[in-house]
Amino acid sequence: MKILLVEDHPELAKSIASYLTQEHYICEVAATFDEAREKLILFTYDVVLLDIMLPDGNGINLLKLLRKDGVESSVIIISAQNALDFKLTGLSEGADDYITKPFPLPELHARIKAIMRRRSPHKNNVLTFQDLTADLESMECRVKGKLLNLTRKETNLLLYFINNKGRMLTRQAIAAHLWGDYTDNLDSVDFVYQHVKNLRKKITDAGGKDYISTVYGLGYKLNAGD
Image 1 (cartoon, rainbow, N blue to C red):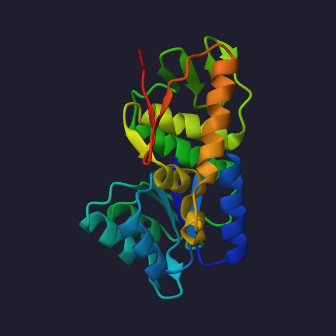
Image 2: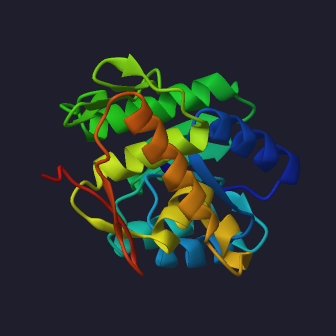
């Protein structure tokens, strides 16, 4: 899941982003109205965590623009403003939830998960592809029932492949999904090759088939094969 955190306080932003990364989310940070606006034009996010008071604008106005532009990301307002009228305004303008600072990070995480359940009420918490399974709650991946010893990046990579089975994924798309906007300053995304190679080896060593095929010069695809 990809999250955009719009927060201008560096320490709080770092704390939230670090926590969400540990919980297996891709979390990008925007410290200003304009930076958030640009990211939302260029990229797609599952959830936006939106502060109201920004140095160059108001989060409510950004929310209005999102909904006007048809952006479907879920929005949780995170604000020190505890007055009822602020909450009602945010919710009436299209926010999905409102949490008042300071808040425990596990509570924020619980609210994110609750919103995603509401968006996909019938979604199974286990992804499957052939003899591969991935539990979205425990983040455990198995092949033919055997637990795979994957790193966090390999786990997220496998989830990305399963969610896009049959589609060709470029190395650039994979890098952006796993590392977010940190890839903007990279000259090369050749490191993706090593992560894909390691994932394929771990699957086949555990008795699974190599479902990940290389589309030479372009990227990779997860398919059933022969």
